[in-house]
Amino acid sequence: MGTPLGDFIRAKRDSIQPETLGLPTHGRRRSPGLRRSDLAARAGISVEYLTRMEQGRDRNPSTAVMNALADALSLDPAERNHLRYLAKITGSECCTRTRPAPPRRDVRPPVLETLRLLEPGIAIVTNRLGDVLAHTSGFASVTNGTGLLDSEVPNLTRYVFTDPRARTLFADWDDVADEHAFDLWLGPSVENSEWLTTELASTAGPDFTRRLNRHLIPQRGSLRLNHPSGCELQLSRETLELSSDAQQLVVFLPADEGTAQAVAQLRRQPYGQLRAIS
Image (cartoon, rainbow, N blue to C red):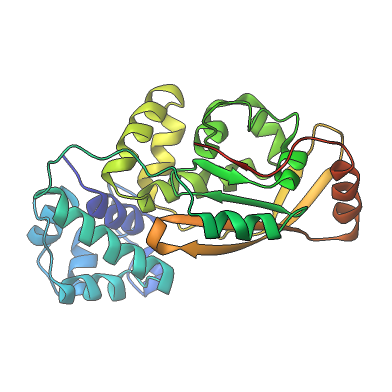
């Protein structure tokens, strides 16, 4: 059985074309990308050791080995951080077998007060699992009619992968799906994400599983929405990490004048007020 670390190393290895590293491309190749022998040689480790890591039979690689692999794979800073994170959680998995605690859903009063100050703007408090913990009336206005907030316990990740309306709402659905799949690795804890990952694997099918296991670092550009009212919205995102709470405060800002006018029109329709979801 593999591990998140092994899956990531293998996915990156498969995505690299040998010629980009100055390696010869002649000879028959059983799989795309870089051979294990090529990567092992670049990292200064044995093929046997690399195989054990990719297959999940070695879960505690040293920092020096991780740095060598990052260099050999030409990882960018975001990918290097993810590699270190996966090494950490892979090593802890074999030692931690306690029952995971439910994800935290309460939002601290100062955070709620900050959200109130952002009214009538478009803002939300969420966690990496996609749980919608609190939102402004502006967020409700923009998402009205999409089904996103219909559930008693709204979850963005579940909505993206299981609600057909999401594919219409998000103009760049593939990018949004990649973001939410990646963020499950960064949840309140890896164990806490298991309940959602298991559920989505059965309901969303192989498309979700493929996105989860390829560990694609998202770019998180502007969010383009096809609103049910007929408006096309383009929103930039500013994210404040609430590290001690394992939560995020995300503010959505109109990226152009047309979006600003459309959002102003949507705000004139009474859809409620600031809401904390328990």
